[in-house]
Every structure is written in C-alpha cells, then in structure tokens.
Image (cartoon, rainbow, N blue to C red; front, side, top):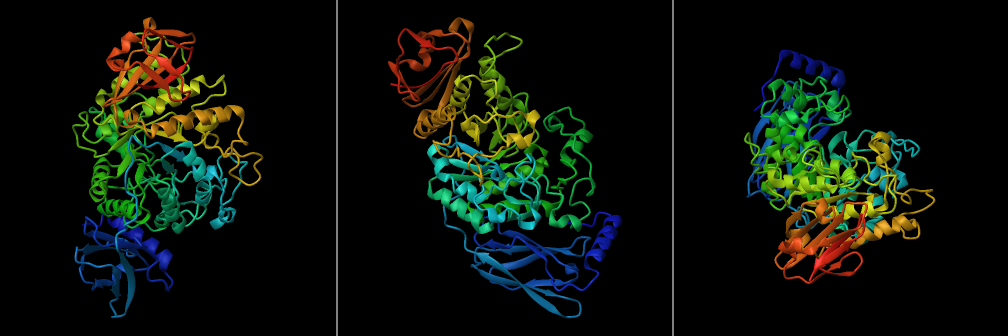
Length: 623
C-alpha cells in the first residue's frame, strides 16, 4: 500500500527514532488511533495506527470472530505500524486483543474495543430550516475556571490574541439564551486539542481529543446530547488540510511525505483561483494546494493513502462517537481535491442525512464557490461531492450594499442592486438550498459599524439574511450589534460576550444587562428567528425577485413561495420614502389582499400603492 519514498527519508526517520527511543521504553505503545471503533459500519475496513518504540519490528496477529487482519503496513519509520482490519457483519461488540510478538518470541497484548453503534439522536444534517449560531468558545463564556491553566495555558483577557478562558460548559450554561433567541443549530469553532495558548482552535495537536481548556471528551458528548434534548443540532468545525505545528506526530513523522513538500515548509500562495482556473499552470496549482498555510500549520499530504485513511476515519469516528449533525470543513479549497471528494463520498455513504459545509472563500463572484458544489455544471474535472458551499461573495458585498445609496448602472451596480445581482448569479449553482449565507463570521469584520445611526441598516441585513435562499449563519454577538473591523484584528472581532466571564460588570445574556438599543436589535432578530421556524415559504420555498430600479422607488422586492404560502420582502435602499405601485408584483401577490408584517404585526393592503419609509423593511406574510 505504501512504499518507502527515499533513502534519505529512511535515514532521517532512523535518526529521529534513535533520539526518541535510544533508552529502553516501558511503554510499548504510546498512541493508538482510533482508540476504539464500532461493528456494523457500512465500510468494513478499519485502519489502526500504532505508535511505539520500534513497534514495526514486531509481528502482529489478532483472533476475534468476524474480524481479520488484512494487512500490516510498515513505513520507513520503525516506530509506526498501520494495521488494516476487515470487520464483517458477523462481528459482535466486544474487546479484541492484538498480539505483538518480537523476534525473540516475547509478546504483549493490546486491547481494542469494538462497540455497538449508537442509537442516540444525531447525524441528522442541517437544512434551510436551520439557522447556525457560530460561537468562538474561548470568547463566549467561562463556565469552568478550573480548566483555564491546564497544560500550561495562560488566560489573559487583556490580550486580544490570547486565551480568555471560555469553554464548553460556558456554552452549556447559556443554552437558554441561544434557544430563546431562536437558533436551531450550534457551530463551535474547533474544540479539538490545540497548543496551550492557541485560542482559535485551528492548530490541532491531537485529532482524537478535546482541548482540555474547553473540557473533556465526556463533556463534549454531554454537550451534544443536551443540545439534542432541546431539539437543536451541533455542527463540528474540522480541519483536515493541516495540523498544528505541535501535533504529537511532528517530532517523529510516520513517513517522509506525511506532509506536503516532503515534510518541508513551503508556504501556500493562497491563490485559490488556481483550483478552478481552466488555464492554471500545474506548478501554480501545486504551490497553492500543497503549500503550508503557515509554518505553524503543516500541510497534510492527503495523497498519501495512510494519511487519507486516517483523516476519513477520524471524521467518521467523531460523527459516531459524539453524534454531531454536521461539519464545517475549514479551508476546503486548500485540500487535495481528489481526497476531498472521496472524504465527502465516504461520510455521506455512512450517514446519508448528514451535511457538510466547505469553506469556499472567494470574495468576487458566485462561480468560484459554485464550482465546488456537488453536481456543479461548471466543474468538468470531477464531482467534488460537497453538499454545501459558503457564499463569501455575498458576505463581502453585503456590508456596503446595505449602506450605499441605490444607484445602479450597467457598469457599476451599487446599494441593494448589488444584492439583486448576486442573487441573479445563482444561475451557476447546482443546489440553491445548500448555500451557507452570512453577513459576518470569525474571520470577517463585524456587519454592524460604529458609524451606524439607528437600526435601519441592521434590520435590513438581518431580514434579508433570514429570508433569502440557503442556510443562514449568524456569528455570536451580531444580535447585540458587536462592532469590529478586520483592520482591528481577529482577536477584536472575536470579542468576549459581556457577562460570560468572572468579574464582568454586566451580562448581555439578560435583558437587564443589555442597553436599550441592544434589546431592540435582539428582539428584532428573535422575532424573525422564531417566526422563521414555522414559515414553510422561507425554509422550503422558491425565490422570485424584482430589480430595485429608480422608477420603482429603489426598493428591492422578492418573494419566497411554497404552495399557497407566500412571504413578500420589501427593502427600501434609498434615503427617501417610496410609494410602491404594487401592481408590478402581481406575479407573486395575485390572490392575496394584504400582508402581515412579522416583526410589527401591522397589516398592509396590497392594492394600489404601498408606502415604504426611507431604509424601511417589511417582511410580509401574505393572506
């Protein structure tokens, strides 16, 4: 399955092993991944990575009904073995034992548990009926201060780029707040083990462990269970493109090409367009695709079959173990495309209702993320099999589009006309339901701006986000008008939730702790979120839109329609009142006499002309 790449790699591995294991070791096995598995999985093949001093010199056997050791793979590093098992449908839950026998006849046994598959809720995917609430756990709430200093971590809230102490229990403590707001799904930035002072979670140091500053494995499973009890879902943030520079295997890599560029640092170009560019030079593609994200995030060589099997199994393990409902895959376009497609296929084959959102970061046009979506007519190279893509184009244009005056032209659309054009570009997508839409996230400046006066702009943005096509995502604090620009830095964008940490002088988790304006913003979002849950037109209907032209009052008008249910959304993009001739919208209003605004309960007549205040917003349930 895997052949030694170079004599140099073998020599390097020998030197590493000599330095690490020159003294007799009392731990014959230091790491075994996965730590356990299940019977009855769709794919009967299981890779077990075994790491220990000179473990490759031993012969391995196993005797367990329904299980056979199909292959033992050795690499140039004598401290690794990769065992491939076939687990047939006849295998029952229990504990098998690997026998490791040395040349002198001595042996030891290592237990490995095979569990019965879970019957708990989970693995149910997420759909346009859901709204994802994105949380940076370190910055949300500190529910357990006792875990703040584990493994040398330093909590210092005065440092925007340092650890602040938030954890899984902090999120659990505020589930009432999240549920009352109306969110259906929680997406946490990565909670897998990271370096001691990395707060964002994107430098994984153990793919099979939860970061102790966030909690334990048991606490994470309990978190998912308790979210499910409330009828909500959990999306796990995963990073398969790269690991952290202090990952446990980095001091003794399994192969000479476990990482891209033969385990040597070569920075990526970040030129993600090369992957979709039909004219791209192969060397340009390789520099982007194989280059390391940075020196502290080594790029995994997913073309190595041992790496690929390890990562795919890790994903399946988390779904089965924790019963998560979906995945947001970080830096999806940076991964090896053939591996990414295989990964998606294998996950969906095991869990058909599951959903994966890939980070497809393209700020200029819908065609680029659409290229990555399963069944894309644009992608003639291969089917990426990715169900959900992220609409970064919309996220980049929205902040200005909801600010600028609506002055469209053939050459330079502005204001809400830019939103209209972005939606018109949906012609490139294979699946309009599975597009993740957002106004901001942990990597972008906040949607609310310090120069905002009143809530008109905020209300238009939120109303659009929660009624347009696709699956909405809201970053924590957006409901409270958090403000920060990209120039201020990621640590400022990912600011603390007041009241989530010991010593805070107020708590935004309570009505009393919020300002009058914060309560107005929170109430507006809550009203839309709670209504949205029962709006079949919004969560499962088609979209029809009208261009926001000057002669029609600069208003962007669109409808969501399913069966006899219609929601009409009207956004005035001008700084002056508009009088809309409603006959223009008869395509979608025919048969209805009025609409009830879902945020104010005001009833508006659809006959004749409709008055829309400057920068006004209506979300109308038609009847």
